[in-house]
Amino acid sequence: MWENLLAAHMVQTGQGPLVFGQWRERIRGRLTDPMRRLLALAPPRGYSPDFLTPPESAEGLRDGLDAMLSLPRRTLRRDLALLTPDRRDLHFVRALAEGESTALHALGDGITAFHDLAVRPYLDKLREHISADRAARSQSMLHSGGEHLLSTLHPAVRWNPPVLEVAIPGTDEDVHLEGRGLRLVPSFFCWRAPTVLRDPELPPVLVYPVVHDPGWLLDVHGPREHRGEPPLAALLGRTRAEVLEATARGCTTSELARKVRIAMATASHHATVLRAAGLITTNRTNGRAYHTLSVLGRDLLNGRGPLARGGAG
Image (tube, rainbow, N blue to C red; front, top):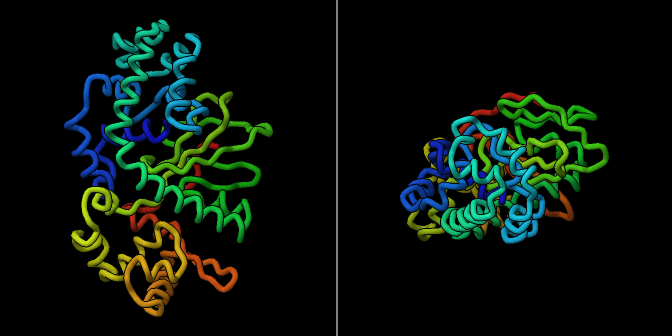
């Protein structure tokens, strides 16, 4: 449900043209009226109702939809009241706020249709990126501990013990965990800034963007061999740019050599150069080197400068 919501945001913006531009072109021309019900509740900037991302959706889209369809009217009305006036005044939104069953099920149908168009065809690629992020975070946790993990999640996230500060545009609120823990949710369609739920009483989550391979869509719709020069080839050289892209998913030196189709010694050399430039980090365990992107490398690969640190706690 988080990926669905954030994909709904992304399709309405022009952000991340290198990563999402072609995907957006494919989706926009195929949007239907049922799908636009979701878009009506998901403005590209500002608040989207918390009920669109229930915690039950961690078990899958169907569980998330079942939880949403079972919500009491007061929850729907409370969340919808936080939308901007132009969105609240839409007939469909007013019907939702009144708890009309037909409107709620129509929203569920729209969410399912949008998921089938914009998310489901790309699930393998999304899972590949998210699995790479989880592997890199696991290595970070194993070798450097929880504080290092929290300090390196994203440029907009800062661990200032005992407070985790997150710079989220337009918000300035404190969330007290009070022993509830914090679920970290790596997301493919999250872009630039992390996001959280508005309601502090809901189970706390922090959704943050993963590193993106700019050629992900070509991997889905066409052979990788037909790709042109990597976007950073003019700066780094073709092979080194491919090495940096491959490292975005986290890998050992031997995996790196296999992905880029170069010799082990060549892969090791390029990794050393990128590490010296501060673009990747390397952890060594049991005689193996595991490479992941640094914050600087992530920003370079995603075509943006570092975000300012600090912000809402």
